[in-house]
Length: 251
View 1 (cartoon, rainbow, N blue to C red):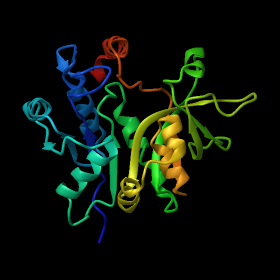
View 2: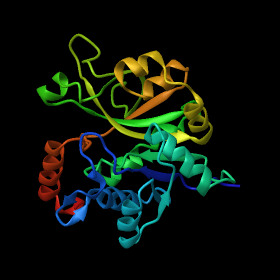
View 3: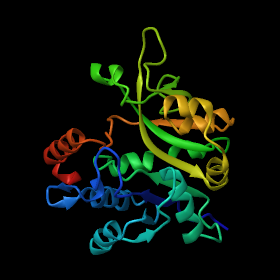
View 4: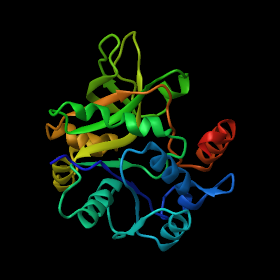
């Protein structure tokens, strides 16, 4: 029996530390979270649901024609919210892949969402994610730009992630890659990931994907052309507004 399409879950919450209420932040007349949801639907990669603890978020998604699921408010991270949603929506486990699309990526293109699934063609891969080449000095210098060490063979679009850091890695001459926070989990990998305690490197770097690497899980990275920046601050929000204004197809 063929497997169902991946389940795409967008975790979102109003209580963001640096930009409270950001899911409802206006971007050209549309709430930020609706931009993310629309791009996920346009990807046509699988059914899409927004998982949130807040009725306000669910209301705007439902008014836009989407599906929202109210989840617990006490999850420590988005991956835990995604896991709860998957358990509630698919207890029969028909979906063998769950894609965690962070709710603060309004400029992530539908094609990039599809690309995040590509590494799972290799059955040895537990988790798939995205990266883009670094082209600006600020990316190399900023701790907000997460870097991934991955060695892409000539012409290859997928490579194994060796480490993630807020520091510039690796050293020496050569390309550097900016990690994009979208994760396609095999169902068993998601179950295992959320059951693990926070790891030492995860706590040190404040990057939860290091928990998976420290536990011996394999993460592969698909390469895309452009970075989709997360919206964490008012300045990020203005940048997203400018980018979506330049590309009306994305808004």
